[in-house]
Image 1 (cartoon, rainbow, N blue to C red):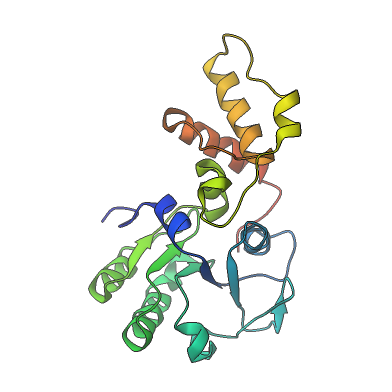
Image 2 (image 1 turned 135 degrees about the vertical axis):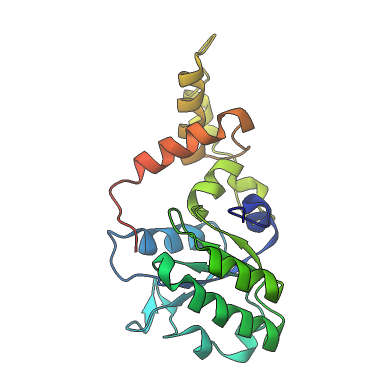
Length: 210
């Protein structure tokens, strides 16, 4: 089965409330940094962590099942920072939530995480999925102003960072990477998206998965 049944950037444009299963209390981990980025970008984040009462100042729940009914009925996406081997069980929990509340609409497995059994469970439950993609990276590549609720042009950065004259492909990719980090007022060109994703991943190597 493909890595996703819905365009990852469409998810980020359309939906706002994200439960993060495996959200971390450790600042060196992606599971801490990515929810922080999403909060800063204007998304509503619901941390799920069995040992935390709050993360980033937001109330955390020990399991998806503990999310109160009124909040569960607003969840759009479940973003999962757990090993791929745990995806089927989380997918079953998501399928149960969909049956009882009509939500969420999307299951998202972070970069490097994918499971075929989970995809089948989700497809049968009518839940779209994205796997092996990072929400933070995809948001930067699409341009933060392209969400319906966030983003301002960083005019100061643009004044001092023009595209080089007759740039090479590598220079174009580097410029769009720096632009995605500093401003993001427009999306990365499709022909450079994978290269810019790689530059973003390299810049984030100081954080660890999980």
